[in-house]
Length: 278
Image (cartoon, rainbow, N blue to C red; front, top):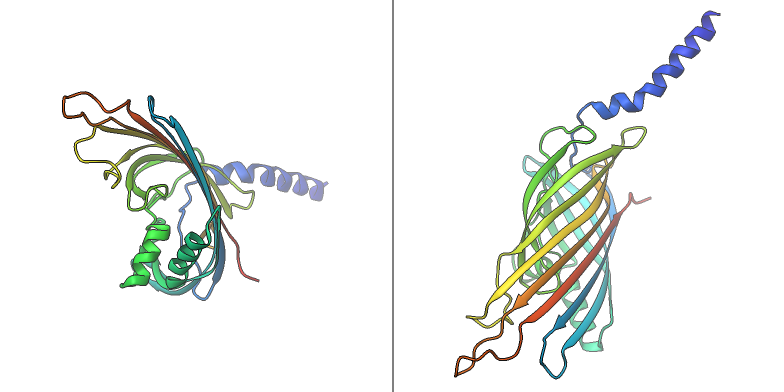
């Protein structure tokens, strides 16, 4: 009888455990173990459609896809984050001419061995200087801080202001105000599932837009993040950025507009996967 009662109490305790874990705040941090090698694959697709009413070719579209395989090796822990060596193993790009792919691979391989610093809240800073570091920033950008610096419970939200590179336009930066939510934890609490959504505005004018032209832009960001709390790393991150930009036509010598406004719609999807090396 006593053992039956004990088993019943244990079963009840186990049934309540996930709820109890969810109610308690947890600290979400990026803090890999020193010596760990983390293979990663970044898949990115950029779809751009431009429409100009009244022109000979009113609508044009272009889609490019890129796959980049890298490894990140945790070398040293500092008060500002983990110093990590990044190694680019391969790059594929579709579609591509021989010249464009060769140029992209050249730039990627120039930065194939670089040092970055990853803070506990997810911010990434390229530590190296020189040409290779510049190419690394151009290829991947420096990731903004995303995680809350304090513990959060399941269902709790936090907001971050972030600057992100707009991959469809080299050198262009956007400002995002995003809201994150800890949606759930795995049964053991080792994996955290986070959702995010936000609005985007542009910080810089694209080089192709003439000075004096009217320019408006708006966009949205949605996505999900999975953090392996034992690994101390983001193991799955999926995001979609949708941007709508309107460029008003410049007036001619007599004040008339040169055609209708050009509308450019850009959709950027990214999927970053990571796993522990065997």
